[in-house]
Image 1 (cartoon, rainbow, N blue to C red):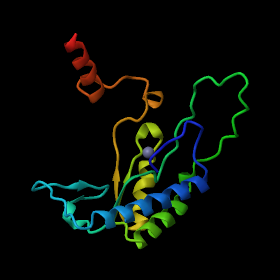
Image 2: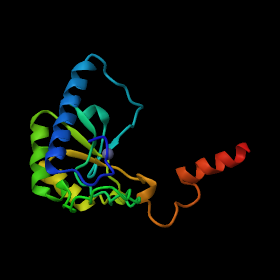
Image 3: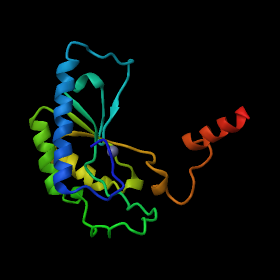
Image 4: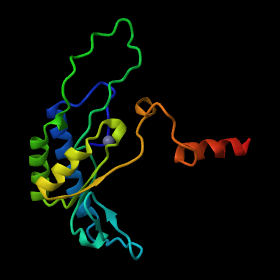
Length: 175
Ligand SMILES: [Zn+2]
């Protein structure tokens, strides 16, 4: 699932459609690039939840941007006065860990070897759920870090030296 909507959490149907579209795209990509073998610097690893894995050990498609656990906070921007009332809040589709485990198992059965979860703590990605999903589905899962959108940043800005403040320092240097 590579895009997010500010209109609220995905419905279960939307989540399943996007997950299957992602798996299809990965399979297509595998066929498209099957003749090229990527090379990696010596000692490279893919840092999955439970172990570092040499890239060559993953012998199939990697889904690079999925959301196995996500609960984006609602968009708090003011709504136009004539906007219809927002739909009632629903639990996120990924709150059903059993469902996501079955989806990940199905992806693995289709040949997927690793899933990169694109969620961050500020997106209310539940790391414990992610670990449970990876364990129960017996699939390599990579967890993401960092921040997503400013509207969901924690109240305290990142400390000096992080990517955001480095960008700000560079901007000031150019003046
Ligand atoms: Zn995403």
